[in-house]
Length: 202
Image (cartoon, rainbow, N blue to C red; front, top):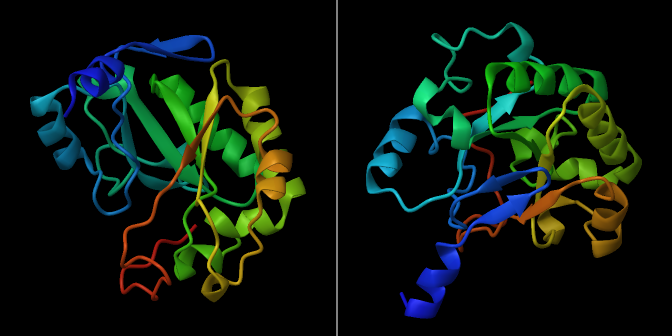
């Protein structure tokens, strides 16, 4: 790592009305960014934010943090932990956001980037980009019920194999009120997605 890059990553960054000490962020990763992995990353340090795995908005309001497979955390990481949620119902997304803020998370990540077949078939994740009005309603509903800023993540493009009509215009229409956008870069073998044996449902 060059000195210039290291200096940049170690600078603070403002996100709406909050800030993080460093600019290096652990990306939200389903089946990877669990509580054990985040604790391992914490021991290395050098990051500004950590993200949870993708959590179902429908389940979060009544989810037990001690028994949940995904919606769980250590109290010591809450001040720099963002909870990622997915769903297609604005009201359910808003209710999940309120629970997340009440628990004390740093912020909320609205998933508009997952192109996995099992998620898109539920009209969630990247599939919502086919309905920018719905995306805008979700963002608006979430923001009404919380005091801090939200984050949305998007795929950088949409391969024809996913059947998604992804364009920069759709992103612009969907994110006028969003404080920060994360562009989710896929790995070389992640496109096109194949149906996974581990399904994530609402």
